[in-house]
Image (cartoon, rainbow, N blue to C red):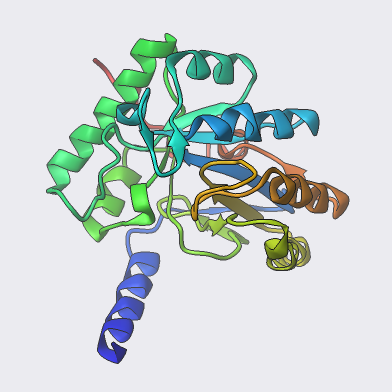
Length: 258
């Protein structure tokens, strides 16, 4: 177990230090983003409504192969949810098509699935998804980080912490927003740390419901996190809004063709 933990630490350090694409955050912080992965319907029907009530928007990383299915996170999004989400001003971002791990298939197969997911979103909604991406399960390989970093505006993992003062757009840090209101103290500590550092804090979750899965949160926790961030003076931004604001510092990938 000790050896496995040590190897995991070495691997994480390598992933965070190699194939980086650094962009300075400048004086834009403190900024907080709320992201929803996969995504379950409740992330939009409940989570999206909460964000809208605060006058802000979120980033939804959609794996289109999950559409119209159900799993341990509950019912997944429907076609109508995508149209409604986009028209409401939320960001629709990439999460592969099949929700596969970058470590479970060859690099070419992973890249093809990422492209397939982007194409599916465009076919369904009639618009191109943002060129921001989140790795399913948070699993990243060095080869995938290098390859996707040349194709996407940003790629997000699940390594915790605050982004800034310099951002690695090839592997943005993000923090889980799981559980109920009893987890609020940790959330508030992260928000306070981000305020002091004037950085960029990303929260991610999945379902949003009164009895969430182990990978989701309650409406109360999401509302409290939003309130704490706004009360502390943080700007609430989608990933796309912030990354686009930093152009032309950011690499702008070409549109994915059919």
